[in-house]
Image 1 (cartoon, rainbow, N blue to C red):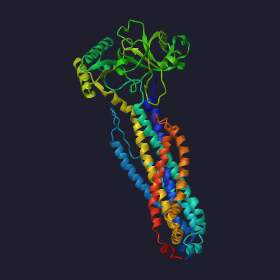
Image 2: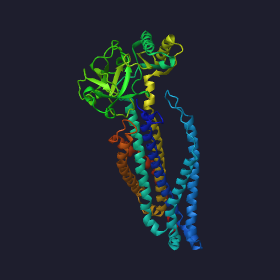
Image 3: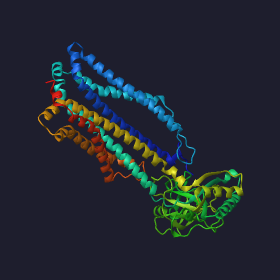
Image 4: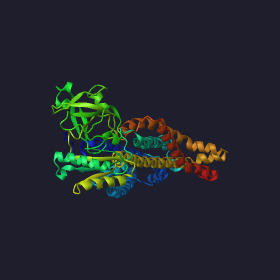
Length: 551
C-alpha cells in the first residue's frame, strides 16, 4: 500500500496536471508577449503620426510634461479599456467552462469561478503594459523639434530611427507566433500518434462492467464463488469470444503498486526495493484483453489458494527486477512477505498508467490466490458495446439484483479519459496558436500600412518617374518579408526548446519534425503576405500629383 498525495486523483494525474497547468501559463505568457509587441508597434506608429500635432501644441506654449502626461493618459486609458474587455471575456469563458462536461465516463465537473485576485492581477498587467509601452513614444514626442516637425510633418531623428524601432516588435511577434503555432501542430501530431500507438493490449471489441463485492457483504470464499459464477454467466452470452475478470485493467484510474524483489535480493531494505504495478486477474485475462504471451503459461484455475503462489510478469519486470530474459522459474516475494512467488509466464510490455510513462514493471497474480473484492468483468465480442454491456449487467443482476454496478462501457470509451489531457492540450494550443497568428497578422498589417503612409511622398515620386508596380511592391514588402523570415528563423530555435518541454506534456509530441517546422514557416509567410496585401495594393493606387501636392 502506498499513500498518495491529495488532489486530483493523487499521484496518478498530479504531475501531468501540474505540467499541463505550467504549460498553459507559459503559453499565456507568450501570447501576452505578442500582445505587448503589437501594442508597442501600434503606439510607436501612432506617436510618429502625431509629430506635427504635438509640435503645434509645443509651439503655442504647451509644456513638454503636459504632452507626456497626455500621451501616457491615452495609452493607460487604452490599456484599461482592453483590460476591462478582457475581464468580461474571462467571465464569459469561465461560465462556459463550468457548464462544460468532459467527454469521459467520470463525474468530473470543472467549477471555474472568477477570482477577483486574478482579475485584479490581469488589470494591473494591462495598466503596466500601457504605461511601459507608452513611455517611449511619449519621451520621443517630448524631445521633438517643433520647426522640423511642422515643416516636414515628422521629426527627422524619428525618421532615421523609426525603422529599427518598429521592426523589433514585429520580429518578436513573428518569433513568438512561430513557437505558438509549432506547439499547436506538434500537439495535434502527438494526439494523432497517441490515437494509433501500441498500448500492449487491444481495446477493440472489449466491454467491461465493474462491481464491488465488499458493498454486497460477501466473505472471501463467497466472493470467489460469485466471481466465478458471474464469469460463467458472461461466457454464456451470445457472441462472447473470451471473458475474464480482474481487479483493474491497464490505463484505468484504479491502479496499485507494490514493493517486490527477487529472492536472491532478500537482504535489501523494503524502502530500496523496486516497485511494480500489480493486478489480480482470472484465467483468460490476457486473451480477453489481447495481451501477447511471450514465455511460459497463462494463469489457470488450478492456481488456487492451497497451491504454490505463481505470477505472470511483463518483459520489463523480467529485465529490471529479475535481470534476465528467461524469467520462467525465478522466484520473487513482496517486501513485507516471506511467501515465495514463482514466475510462470512473461507477457509483452504495455501502457499501464499515463501514456507518458516509461516502461514499468508489472506483475499479474491469480485472483484465486490473492482475492480482491474490486472486480472488473471483461468480455471480448463482436457484438456492439452497448448491447454487450447490457447483457453483462443483466447476467450479474440475475445473480445478485442488489449488487451495485459501475464503470459500464467499452474499454475504448475508458481510453477517452487517458487521451483527455492530450485532447485538452491540443485544443488549448490550437486556440493560443490562432490567437498568436491573429495578433501577429494585425501587427504586420499595421506596420506595413504605417510604412506606406510614411513613404507616400517617396512612392509618389517613384511612380511619377515611371517606376513599375513590381518595384513599388518590393519597396513596400521587401523589408517586411525579411523581418518575417528573420523572426521565423529565431522562432524555430525557440520552438526546438519549447518542443522538448511540450513532449513531456503531450505524449508523442516530438520536437524534431522538419515537416512541422516547414509548415509553420509557410503558415506565417502566408499570414504575413495576406496582412501586407491590402496596404501594398493601396500603395499602387497612390496618385503622384496628390502625393507631391504638399511640395
